Length: 117
Image: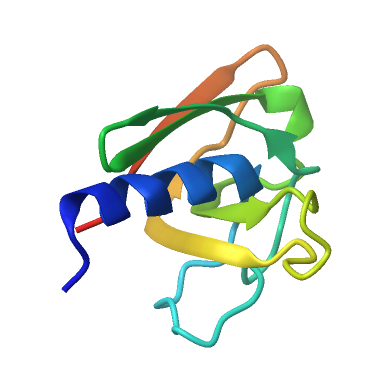
């Protein structure tokens, strides 16, 4: 069992090493062996993030003009390459019902909470 202080330490490690967010238009189920999104449609962005106890909270916004597809259906959190052993690794991928299309003047925001439990 990982104790509560250990869970908080893991949250801090995730916070420090994973802050790139990517969105795509692939929508199939996520596999535990997956290393990328099905099909990225933006340039990865750095998220605003914070640690709250044993949670890492991510927030990011994309302008419609940044999205190169008619719709989006997946989002992923990636390593920021501050640790060479991680090399942009995928931490988490979430697929969802398709959203879009987006006008160039639109903005879409995402809040993601990673809970260490």
